[in-house]
Structures are given as structure tokens and as C-alpha cells.
Amino acid sequence: MRTTLLPVLCLAVAAEAQELHLTTTGYTARPQCSKSFASPSYYFQPFSYSLSETVRYATSIPSPTVTRTYAPAYKDAAKHLTTNVSTTTWGSWLPGKTAIHATDTHDPYGQAAWSSMWLEADLQNYTTTGMFSTTVSPTPVPTSELVLPPRDYFGPTDCYDFPRDFVFGVAGSAAQIEGAIAMEGRSPSLLEKLISGDKPKDYVTNENYFLYKQDIERIAAMGVEYYSFTIPWTRILPFVLPGTPVNKQAIDHYNDLINTVLDAGMQPVVTMLHFDSPLMFVASDNITRHPDIGYNNAGYQNETFVDAFVNYGKILVSNFADRVPIWVTFNEPLLYSFNFQGVDNVVHAHAQVYRFYHEELKATGKMGIKFNDNFGVPKNPKNSKDVQAANRFNEMQLGFFANPIFLGKQYPDSILKTLPGARSLNKTELEYIGHTADFFGIDPYTATVVSPAHEGISACAANSSTTNSLFPYCVNQETKDVYGWNIGYRSESYVYITPTYFREYLSYLWNTFRHPILVSEFGFPVWDEAEKELSDQLFDSPRSTYYLSFMSEILRAIYEDGVHVMGALAWSFVDNWEFGDYSAQFGLQVVNRTTQDRFYKKSFFDLVDFVKARQH
Ligand SMILES: *[C@@H]1O[C@H](CO)[C@@H](O)[C@H](O)[C@H]1NC(C)=O
Ligand SMILES: *[C@@H]1O[C@H](CO)[C@@H](O)[C@H](O)[C@H]1NC(C)=O
Ligand SMILES: *[C@@H]1O[C@H](CO)[C@@H](O)[C@H](O)[C@H]1NC(C)=O
Ligand SMILES: *[C@@H]1O[C@H](CO)[C@@H](O)[C@H](O)[C@H]1NC(C)=O
Ligand SMILES: *[C@@H]1O[C@H](CO)[C@@H](O)[C@H](O)[C@H]1NC(C)=O
Ligand SMILES: *[C@@H]1O[C@H](CO)[C@@H](O)[C@H](O)[C@H]1NC(C)=O
Ligand SMILES: *[C@@H]1O[C@H](CO)[C@@H](O)[C@H](O)[C@H]1NC(C)=O
Image 1 (tube, rainbow, N blue to C red):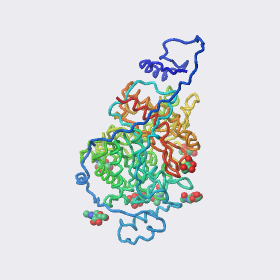
Image 2: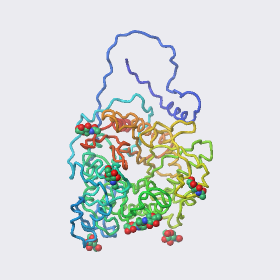
Image 3: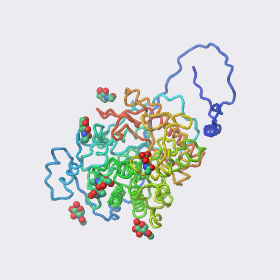
Image 4: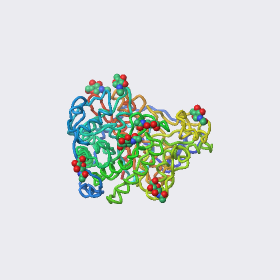
């Protein structure tokens, strides 16, 4: 048997993409086939085994000879800070030991005060025990781990290359990988309280707080260019509020993490707040349900939140912005805090940090914000009520933030007329907040099929009672299309493989919010993956299909739809703690939770190879 590749006709492929959108009857066209083969002729020939794999290896990117700077170094940047930023250190909270016996009770920011925050957080079943208690030295990744897997039979047939400045990387977030939650001065966050009962907590996770050097080494060895990570507020400022001391060990830790990324030839992308909101903003009996809305409560509506976040953001950029080209202020700020005051606070806080970064520090990197919104698509695009429902859904999730931040426009009417306590922004506020983002971050995991609430949108929107489960969107969300088909191939959780909706989404975002789009997370937890044997987990073809189809649609959006896609960051570089769960595996690597060993999955090689093959 011989394998021969048919020549690919690029123009024909572009035409086919249009067909797939428009054709509702008939067969899928094969425009690459110039003639029909319906009359075979059979013959004998000598047989020999001919299939042999050529061994190819992932190639790490070379270490840089020069590193660009984007802002003044800390000693100069610190002159722009107006609150006390003295540094100190604390120990670790070991139940029954330090916490109980610290004697410096006179010091409002001493060890005793710090420990008492953990006592008040009242973590039953808390254990500090991972394998590590200090930074682990990295070891080079052996070439035997970098052999590329067999290719999948089907794959993208596009002919486009990525723009030279395209940001390609992988992402993770602190609470989902770090562990060491009560060590070296970190104070409690929402995430230590959010998950109740006997579900797994974030106490240990991947121990990346100690294994970051090895994790970075493994990403760089694959040839990835950008590493997107998050910094926990409660590590940098254990007492959270302006004027309280900065944790020296945390500053040292993230300085070293950033330098390790740069030394490995990669670039860092830093997110300031990724669900790990300081616990002190969240009244303990109000954690899981918001009184008005019935959504989780991340405390953004707290009266001290804006000043506190701005102070924290300024400290971060003063310390690290010299080496970090891309910043994200908030990750998915709607997800745990859908209430008017919370979002209004986020919008104001974001704008202040952005202005400090560009106007006072005169920093030259990029700063944006990233949102969750599984693209709401109308159940029947020809039904205007479904279209209206989809518009409302997307606008309430995105326009709420993006109207003011990206366009200098008022909050959407759907918000002002629905959310309890909603107020419009005045002219001064709109001028201050407008145009304070360099890119639009979106985590477009999948699409969701939308139609109006049964009783109609306005009747539902007028009823904010806690029993009204569709409030405030007032739309039905489904995973089946109008003909009853699943919207795509299903994962372990809410994600379906929806690449063509994704391309349409990129057009929606670019044409609505008019800023370069950073696909700041996207990924796929393969069905039942955690239950499989290791070798079967590693051969994760559905995840490859997800990534390659989405990346291919990004290229089509860029070249065929004129959409400025700035980059794409795959979620996640490793299987991690999914908020009480380890079974929805979004990772490009498997983790053995006993040994903390990491293993590259096939999709990691396929994704990097897809990008490298399209860079010139
Ligand atoms: C800054 O905070 C530190 C630690 O709390 C304190 O010792 C110091 O006096 C403060 N400095 C000023 C100028 O307030
Ligand atoms: C502590 O662990 C027990 C046994 O797993 C569980 O039933 C209980 O809900 C846990 N408590 C908390 C607060 O997590
Ligand atoms: C807001 O946060 C502060 C801590 O910064 C806390 O003292 C206060 O109780 C919180 N307010 C509410 C209403 O929870
Ligand atoms: C929790 O929320 C309720 C309803 O808004 C409020 O009355 C109560 O004071 C809150 N509790 C705390 C401790 O903030
Ligand atoms: C706009 O709103 C801000 C914040 O509420 C307020 O401080 C300011 O006075 C208002 N400005 C005008 C012109 O109304
Ligand atoms: C509000 O919605 C709930 C749940 O759908 C329903 O039981 C209740 O009757 C509605 N209230 C009004 C005033 O429509
Ligand atoms: C983790 O590694 C240990 C030691 O090699 C092994 O016994 C165990 O089966 C592994 N666990 C999983 C889930 O593969």
C-alpha cells in the first residue's frame, strides 16, 4: 500500500468553507476532486511492508539573547505608588502549630494576625501535605519524551500561515495548579470556601508553587512561545487592602517565575485576578448564593473592592511590567459575581489600572480583560425572536463590560432594565472608562443554542425572584440545534466541538467591539478521560480535533473574514483542579496525582506542530 497525498487546491477549500455554512440539503462538495473515479481496475502486485514512521521530535525554542523591556524596573516604577508598600514575610499555617502559638498579637499585620485569617476561614479537613515544601530544581526533558505521536488521518486542509506577531501559548491559573495555599504568607481566597463537602479542594493540586521551574521547562521543550499564568492577590498582599504590607516571598516567587519563563525563551502573559478573590470581601454566609440573583458571590461588590484592586494592580505592574508584554486585569469577572455593583466595580477598577499602566508608568506592553461567554447562537437564525434572545444573551455577558471599556458606550439596555440596582454611567465616567483595553480577551470554549424564555423575555426580566432560574438572561440554553442534533461532539463537561460557530463568533466580536481578539482560553475535556489507562489518556484524538479545527477557523477568520485575531492560549497546559473536580481534564498533559509526574498528550504535539507548520 502506498500513501499519496492529493494536491490541495487552496481556492477550492475556501469555497468549500462557504458551502458548509450555506448548504442545507445535498452532499458535502469535494471541490478538490477534479474528476470522478467510479470504475476501478483490479490487479495483483508483489507485496511488502512499507509503512514506517519517520521519527520527529518537538523542538524547543532557543533561549533569547536579548529580552525586551516594556516598563521601568521596580525601583523607578515604585515612585508612582502612593500607598505604603513596605515588604515583610510570614510563615506557613500549620493547624495546631504556628497558627495557635504566634505571640505578636499587638501587630495588626504580624504572624498572629495572619494566622487568624486562616483560623477564621475555618477549613475543615485542611491538609498541607503535598510531596514538596520547597522549590524543586528542574531537570531537562529527555528527547524520549519529545517524540511526536502518529498523526491522525483527518486534519485541516487550509493553506494559511499565522501572522508573525500571532501570540501562541498555553495557559493555567494559580489556584488550579499551585497548591501550597497557606504557605509563605498566602491568605485565604474565595476558592478555599467555595467547594464544600468531600469534593477535592485546592489545597495541593499540582504543587506548581514548588514545581513551576519543571512545568516551564516542559512547556518550553515543546516549542510553546507564551505561558499565561495568574498571580494570587492573597499571596502578594495577605491583608489585601491598600497600605498593608507586601509579601516579599511572593514578589520573589513571581519574579523568579517570570525570569524562568524568559530564560526558557518564552514570553509571560499575566492575569491579575482569576476567581481567587480575597475571602475578606465575601461575607461567610453569603458565599454560594447572591441574595438578588442566586449566583455565586466573589465579593466584587464590596465597598472597598475598587480601591483595593487598583492598589494591588499597581503593585503588580510596578514590580513585573518591565518584563511582561501582555496583562489581563480580570478573568471571566461575570462568572462568580453577576450583580450590578460587582460588575460596575470591575469596570471602574479595570480602567484605573489600565490608565496607571499606560499613563503613569508609560508602559508599552498590552493590557486587556478576558470574558466568559459560550457563544449564544439563535436556535433558528431565521426566527427574529431567537436572534433577539441570542443578542440579549451575548450582550448581557459581554456588552455589560465591553460597551464602556472598549467603546466608551453606556451599559446595555438589557442590563439597565433587568438587573436590580443597575445605574447608567455618567459622561465623566464614560470618558474615563472608554478605550481602556488594548485587546479583547475571550474564552470561547463552545457555543450554546439560545431561544427566549417560555413566558417571553420581558415577563421573565420583570421577575427577579430567586426561584426564576432563567433570570437575568431570560433565555433558554440548549446543546441541540433546531433539528435535534447535538451542536457538536460532546466532551466530559459543557464543551462541544463547535469550530464553525467559533469562526462566526470571532466575526461577531471583532465587528461589535472593534479591538484585536485574544482567544485567552480554549480547550476540551475528553469524555471519561480520567477513567482510562494512561496510554489511552495520552492518545487524545478528540482534543486534537478540537484544537486543530479551532486553530484552522482562526486562520480562516483572519484571512477570509478580515478579523484581527491577536493570539490563542490553549487551556490548559496540564490537567488541573477544576473547582472541586479532577475528572474534567482540560490538560495538554496528564498528571499522576501520587507522584506529580507529568506526561505529554498527543494533542499537545499536534497543536504545536499545527502552529509551527504555519509560521514563516
Ligand atoms: C508601612 O508599613 C509598615 C508595616 O506595616 C510599617 O512598619 C511602616 O511604619 C509603614 N510606613 C509608613 C510610612 O506608613
Ligand atoms: C470533611 O470530610 C468529610 C469526609 O470526607 C466530609 O463528609 C465533610 O463534608 C468534609 N467537610 C468539609 C467542610 O469539607
Ligand atoms: C467588605 O470588605 C471589608 C474588608 O475589606 C469587610 O471588612 C467588610 O465587612 C466587607 N463588607 C461587606 C458588606 O461584606
Ligand atoms: C448576607 O446577605 C444578606 C442578604 O443580602 C444580608 O442581609 C446579610 O447581612 C449578609 N450577611 C453578611 C454577613 O454580610
Ligand atoms: C459621575 O459619577 C461619579 C461616580 O458616581 C461622580 O463622582 C461624579 O460626580 C458624576 N459626575 C457627574 C458629572 O455627574
Ligand atoms: C416568577 O418566576 C417564578 C419561577 O418561574 C414563578 O413561580 C413566579 O410565579 C413568577 N412571578 C411572577 C410575578 O411572575
Ligand atoms: C501513578 O504512579 C504510580 C507510581 O508509578 C503508579 O503506581 C500509579 O498507577 C500511577 N497512577 C495512575 C493513575 O496512573
